[in-house]
Length: 442
Ligand code: HSE
Image 1 (cartoon, rainbow, N blue to C red):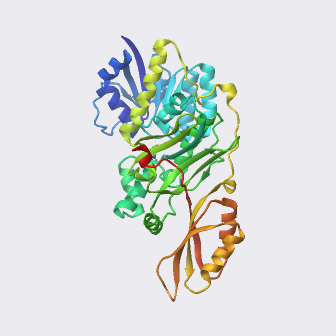
Image 2: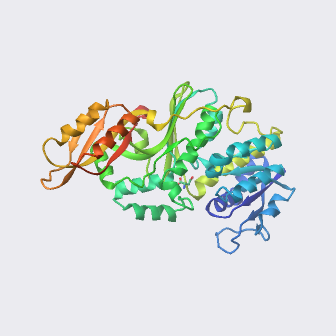
């Protein structure tokens, strides 16, 4: 039986998961690939923490260079994270002709084009299924299963930490900070959880998916990003009373030679399939012009789901190596000469539905002042709700709009904020009425 040697760099949560699968499911993988996957080295600066894995003597080492310089290592698994050390590491590994598997979405969102370009020149494969959606095979689905489709839209819950926090607030009334702490303890959150809660991690993932879906260079910087840190339990509660859930969504829509690509808290109807995706689970709906709507669902973060996706990439590379077909599937799904820049639409140009909550002094004429300004900006109101009464102070006034242009909404809100009857900043949450309904798929 042929042996393929593997080196893991980074023995943290994900590196430990990959090690466990390689050791515990060794025979199963051999039966499926006809190849022996030999974990030769794991490099990490921490050689003392007990990961509860029994390694052979000499496997755990302190220096990644040993792996880079070992001509017997065929595949390097990078689970270090970050975009400085990991970038140098990957570029050096490619230079040495090693295939790479990584879950590093931050790195790929920033430097993916350079990494893929170098890999193509050296005829090595970069596997990055684990970078988006944990165990969900979303990259394989876009690049391979849906190869015959033009992708019209993608709507996804792609950050386990945010979904965990929003679900905990909504289902158990857990405070934000406590829910974040739990997510960190469960190993879902990034080293810097700001990346999770401010939507940056989701945007990294969306940048990768958009590139594969439409054949464009990775463009993270033009994606509109808004996180969940300003979402209050009050808005979650009101949304539920109205029959909606608030989720941090990654949204991309094909707009004829432009792409909508945005990440923000989004109200979706309870009837939408994505509204029932809770905890650290991720899900994505993909609309293709041949398949219509399809969805993937699974654990998007944590040790074993992420490790499972990494093993899938390793075995793809192993099968290619064994059959002599290296880099069979292009990294971004399209042949290199067909990858071309596609502009991302500015958020001001999108049209969608909106939820707006004002804190307004409770007196006659308030509603007409607000609705007058909205009307002047071509915004049509679907419904208005006042929560309670308060003769002496402010009350929440909630409005749902029909489809409106974002630039009009922003102009109207800035005018309304200046009214003396309004306290604080209005809350704005975009509403997505499209999407797969639970009943359509049952
Ligand atoms: N911090 C990420 C999340 C890890 O919570 O989804 C998986 O990419």
